[in-house]
Amino acid sequence: MSEFQEISSTVVAELGEVFSRVPEQNLGAALDALETHQRIFVLGIGREGLGSKAFAMRLTHFGKTVHWGWDDTTPAVTADDLFIMPSGPANIPHLHYIAEQVKKTGATLLVATAVPDGLTAQLADIVLTVPAHTYGAEDPSGLVPTIQAMGSLFEQSLWIFWDVLYLMLVRRTGAKFHDLVARHRNFE
Image 1 (cartoon, one colour):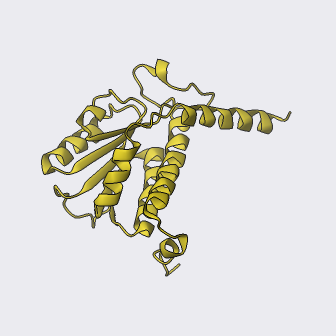
Image 2 (cartoon, helix red, strand yellow):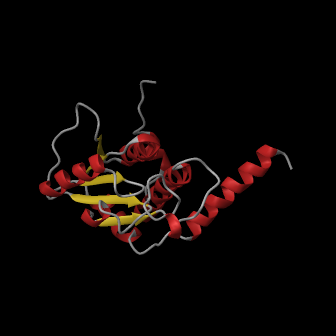
């Protein structure tokens, strides 16, 4: 077996272990929130943010009004909105501050994390757990271990997790892919 095959097989096995351990009890609440809120805000940092920005794009294709939290054109959050934020270790100070500000608006806060009892997750209305090793977790003992650097396993898992949640939303609502494609940016 080549080094590439060895490493890629291990990474794929790690991802499989993460998804076999995802608790499903809050998925219904997350799908309800995605379905019922017309305006959705998504904010993330680093590689977690990149995967979450991809999720925001898909929600736009679904027909939601979606704002990426870091854009200068992002409007004020209101009590009618859904605010989605990943925080792998749920203890990143500036993300926690943002979660506190969002809670003051009355918006529904959804946090995706590896540490469901972490500080920021405790503020959330909906917590989605992705039990992958993440950078900065104070106690990684309950998380799927990895051969990868820093938070790579959580970040990869989060991207796929968002795609799976999106497919669940599409199936649940009976949306058709051709309708979603029609909402894709058309000036590329």
